[in-house]
Image (cartoon, rainbow, N blue to C red; front, side, top):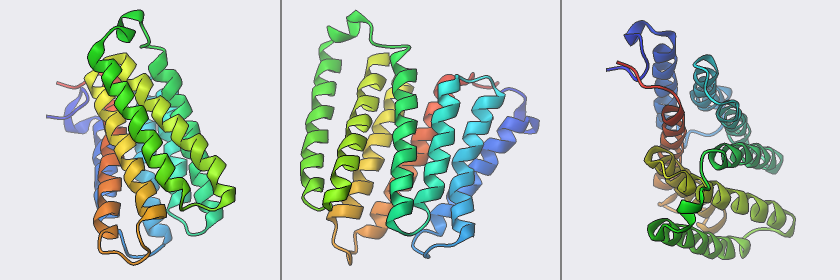
Length: 224
């Protein structure tokens, strides 16, 4: 069963299949250094999701969030602090797009009275603050402000996702937040030489890609 109408012959189903193959190939090449092939696989996997969202008439903010994420993937697949900062800015913009998108379908007064959602929001904020406190102990002065801004946007994305009360969107946001949290810990806190780094990087990619696909499927009609 294919996710979009038209079966295996549908170009969007084909594009999603290629995206999945690219994501798996990138996963298999983790830890092999930096190359343009690895960058292409990482970027293609998310860029195709943006193209599918655009072709199928998805919300413009969803397309923007996926496209900006693909740009961030390209930057983060390269070495150097400049590439890292560029990737951070790209993903910050992606989160802003998702925040506005989720806020446009959530934030009803009833949500504010829902105890489970209020507790989940409080837990998200608490975890975000605790993680930020640890990370700031390990980052240089020039990176502190970008990291604070990014973490704030990430938490806001999670909060607006909770406010939609839509399980797929909430699930995608939880995976995205978990992916970024693991990435931050692996990059800034985990020792440079650690046996935990490879599985952490694997978890980062699996959670991140699953989150983006979940966002796509949450806004695009399913198939037959």
